[in-house]
Length: 200
Image (tube, rainbow, N blue to C red):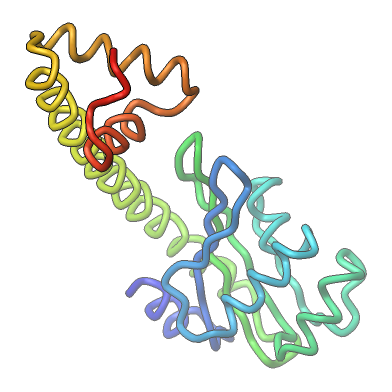
């Protein structure tokens, strides 16, 4: 796990995690080395600010030397310190147009990170971003294949039910998608689960 490697090789790091923000601005914690990075993510998501949020939205590396004296995030910094994080280092990850992220390193000590931490962490963040993009594309590919299978199965049910060809079945799916304002794969799943009626 690359976050374990980050924890082990970046001077000062005690915990690490990856935060992803998707289109709907929902936060996801990935590959955390303990519960602490997830708790910090939840805190920043709830309050809408913090080093990770700034790294993601401002495309920058953010260093926090001491949460107990940090002024940039007056709401989240004291709570983060209360959870046990004194120092934090967040690197923005260049991912996709729909998903952005950050590699976050945490320490229970003040002034835990130095110039070497920033340099080594930045190099690791580049590798994390490349691996993350590959993983996200694989997920999208699997989702696309699953959707194609659902649509094919629904088309087959419509073809059998109404004695029509594949193009006509697809036209029915498309119309139902437009009328219900539902994605095509959800319409297909509904047909598979509940049958091809209502009538075309």
